[in-house]
Image (tube, rainbow, N blue to C red; front, side, top):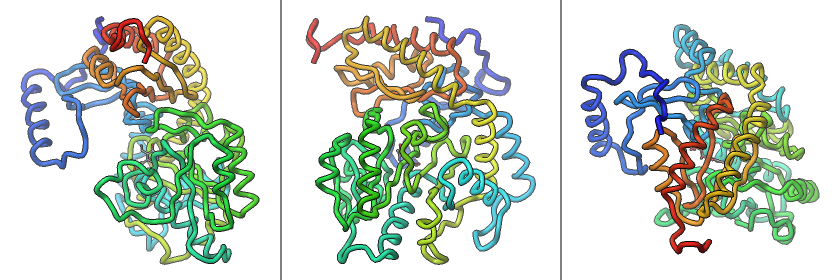
Length: 423
Ligand code: PLP
């Protein structure tokens, strides 16, 4: 299929010498960058809206969006302008002083979500680390049960790669012992198990409203409502990890609004900065009060450039009503994926919310991802068999049609391992 014949390579990229640029970037990366990622052989050099271009001038429709970072599209002009303007004024200042973009962003986030106060950091893992520390400190402050508190988390979760976030995740831990103690993992969407595990020594329950890395698995509304009740009964905090689900992804600004269950604490990162690295913990005011000067900190947390990007991205999300668009176009994408599921035996199920969708296969999905990329469509595979769709929220129905046509071809090349039998 002619993927992107209408997408011209912008001036100054590709053309003569571009191949050399690609090879030197790949060679230098392989030689000098630690091998923590299995990268595809593509060097991306530019992005605009739902499209990115590689160093050889090839265009790709981006249905991964930096793993749910570029929700307002690549290089949204308002985000870029805000960042540039801030760069001319002040790149960085210490958290020993006040900063206008940081204060404004905290106010905006509090106003549109839980009220309370915000702590800023750089990433999702750091936001979860901060939330874990806050939950323990709050437990200590309120004189919780004697002994060390527990934090309940769920199988299939992903909360990041730092040590406590990894302990909360409960996977990818081999070789990294000793991990911080105090985390207990329970089956996801199993309220009875949570009820049995709950006790006065539980400081918090940490949960993703839709598990992302775990295979795009939405929580059941009754499960989240039940967790809210259990936390209220014991005085434990309910923490939602909205690092992937936040910023419009599931059809509301935050997924908790969609489920109608309000957490005490919410962690954000990924799309918050419109493409710049920033993470945040938003907490109810009385909970936030447990952090006092010296309890937690981060040199770059709330950096003025990152906060300016975040403020602009938030304005774009709200003014362009991108959550509603995620809901509408997400429904269209889900319906088109369901058509493919009906035609391709290798597909087991399509699931998700808004523009956070997963197509579960009967076979590992990496070959489908590679075949799509070769045809000009970026997506990824998580939990081995789940093709994950996290496009920018600005995509159109025509973009969906284009992506589905490419995926259709890639799936046609992916037979079931035992012909005629679903695994
Ligand atoms: N929490 C969730 C739900 C995530 O999806 C991720 C990343 O994929 C993280 C936390 C970790 O975020 P980061 O990679 O910014 O540390």
